[in-house]
Length: 118
Image (cartoon, rainbow, N blue to C red; front, side):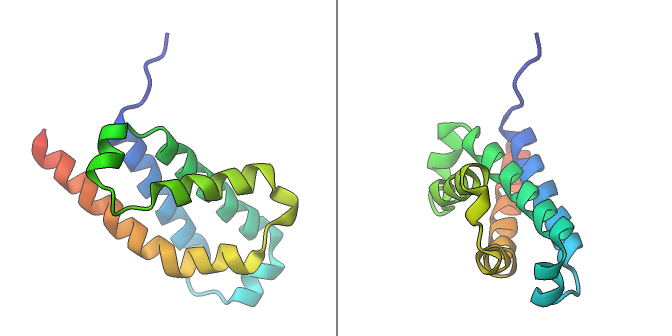
């Protein structure tokens, strides 16, 4: 039987997904993003991965880093998965441009702190 990934692996999955999104949208405009359905849905898929990995982090990690808006991240994933027909491109773009850089920084700090404990 396969073992479940631990917090370190899930945090790395989150970080990797954020970096993928950053690479997708590097040097593009909202118009290009909005007109390119493949890019839009690739970003949404990575945001779903972020939400799913966040949902499976231990309560200890989520409690230790309460400043991270885990519930909103997980909630966004749920919207993307269950309300896929009503996704607002402007909201996705706003999350990518304004929220992900701060979230990446938080994830990097958490990973760094956990690595010091090893």
